[in-house]
Length: 95
Image (cartoon, rainbow, N blue to C red; front, side):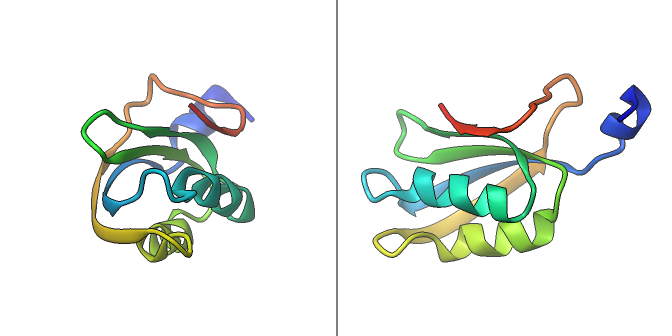
């Protein structure tokens, strides 16, 4: 893939609020990212939220599943913003 095509990919950062830590939510996001061919990272934040950085793939389908969450999670809010082009990932992983 050329540099210019990488820069044209969809890039989103999501901040997920609710009961999303200690309930397997990051592992759920990892599996969902693989399902939708997403590259990026998922991380628990100190404020109780989960941050997801996502590039490429089917971000619409991915976002819908972020709202659903894992079996034990309760997602109350998903805030979305554009991810800076300076960030790039070769795969999806948990931080």
